[in-house]
Amino acid sequence: MIDLKLLRDDPDRVRESQRRRGEDPSVVDRLLDADELRRAAETSFAALRGEQNALSKHIGHLQGRLKKAADGEKEQAQAELDAAMAGTSDLAERVRAADARRVAAETDATALLSQLSNVIDPHAPVGGEDDFVLVELVGTPRDFAAEGITVRDHVEIGEALGAIDIERGAKVSGSRFYYLTGIGALLEFALVNHAIALACGNGFTPVIPPALVKPSAMEGTGFLGQASENVYRLEADDMYLVGTAEVPLAAYHSDEILEATSLPRRYVGYSPCFRREAGSGGRDTRGIFRVHWFDKVEMFTYSHPDDAENEHARLLGWEKQYFDSLEIPYRVIDVASGDLGASAARKFDIEAWVPSQERYREVTSTSNCTEFQARRLRIRMRDEDGVRPLATLNGTLVAITRTIVALLENHQQADGSVRVPVALRPYLGGREVLTPL
Image (cartoon, rainbow, N blue to C red; front, side, top):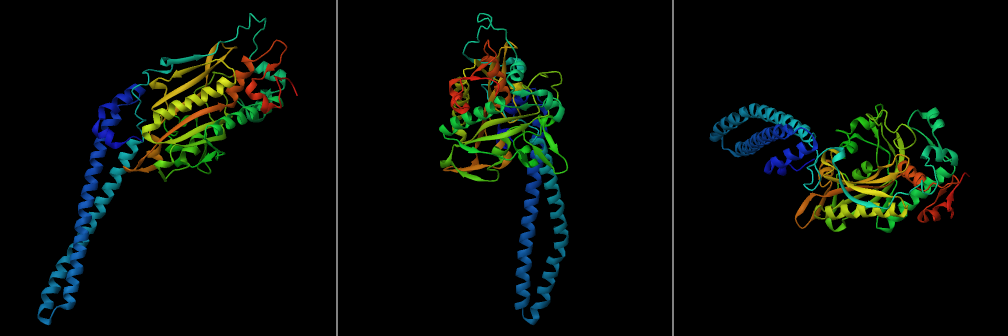
């Protein structure tokens, strides 16, 4: 959630952020009104509680006085005590009523606050999905025609290699499911091990997190708002299947205070990811580019807010390092405001070249969530300025299925084999090409 102080001090900035996202700016005004009511209710409750405490002390004083009073003074002392006691019932009822108003006002304000997305970085481009800014082009797509190769898509290549079995995936689990078999399964392990080695070499702690989380974790990371339609929920258990390891990694330090001297804390998680892909009917129905389940290696950082922008650049750098090693042409884009997730203030995507589609497609993203998730998950840091929220950032190192799509298609050979990038060969027993097992 956003900082209420920012909302009070600079509501126009928050309204503009909402407009840039294509979201409702009127929430800001409703929240300001609710916040004022909440603070008034808290003040009223605090005043009545203070009055109640003062009366309690006064009664205690009168009771002590009555015990010590001489016979001629007892009647007066008892009368004063009775008068004081007579007001306790009415005051207690007023305190209960004020507390109820305070709780209701707090609930209303919190509900409105949860509707606000993170405040967008002013450097993020404004617009929808197609309004991104091109940051960088890396590599040159192969001229397959010049090589005398007819481009095959990843499905044809994968089936010929015995690497992908979509037909049986659909038979067992339905559409948008698959099996990775033989060399395809080994390729996943190679991609994962290469990613983990790269991350550990850059100071990340490896983690295998739970793929089922409580509602508080999903809500805290911002996935039960605009993204909720794509989340799988187990109603019988009130648990959620994660769509990314970002969720359990973000919640790992929930309700904790971390020493600023221990930051940044960097984790790299490997997990299955589950997405309903609601609203994507008819798109990418062939193959394994857009599926309901895939495995992913995700980087996650707890950072000092002052270093968050630099950490964001570092995460993007490690993503580029990984895709450079796979020898796949790609581009980096600065994602436009209307295409950001609720938690992200700014996001960069890497889009790999997919020869069969003759276009770039998203394979990784990295987001700076500033203090938004930390406030929701109650994660704070302690430094010389006291205890306050820290910043969280995330970045995909490898999403397996989409990376396999890009790798098979970009490195396909005329004889039906697939060239193995040099960096992956140690993880594939030294293989220089992928062939059926």
